[in-house]
Amino acid sequence: MFESPFLFLCLYLTGYIMRAMALGRETLLIIHDVRSVHNVASMFRTADGAGVSKIYLTGYTPGPIDRFGRKVSAFTKVSLGAEDTVPWERGDSILELVQKLKKDGVQVVALEQDTRSARLGSMNFDKCVALIVGNEVGGITGEILDEVDVILEIPMRGIKESLNVSVAAGIALYGLTK
Image (cartoon, rainbow, N blue to C red; front, side, top):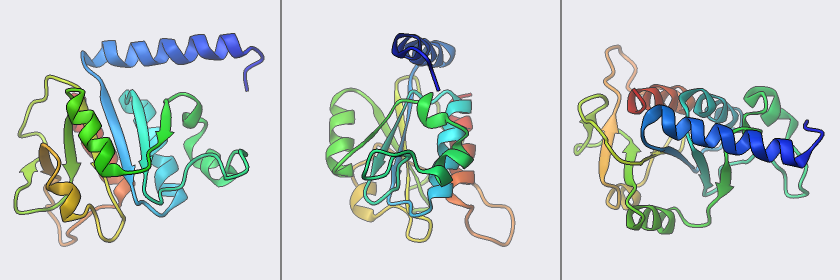
């Protein structure tokens, strides 16, 4: 895509700095155990638009690069190259990642329907926030929810009890970055 690795690095770092400056704080996204490559790619594209500083892929979440180091065409078709504009990495253990981020002063927020959930928009965050979204069917496990700082949910006003994970992530990211 870029002729010069130096140009790519400059654009990459400029984007990273601009995201943090625009929000006054960083927003991170953790995508855990999401099966659909289309959902993950859609979240990459939305994360770029919402100014997310970094994405972590944990569990069996598919990434933009296959095991042979090649770009996954189905991913790139949906993400429109956002995997090249938003820094990302694969994490081995979500629990270790959550503990590390909390130790680094990051407020870790899970998006899940739970008896402990607060409504999205009811809280203000003044420091770096990491949003966790989970599996399309099972959501985020209780073990993970027990480790986060805050659990948020999107109020549902219709008959259906939930949204597609990529749609919910987009609503939550924009809600957290306003």
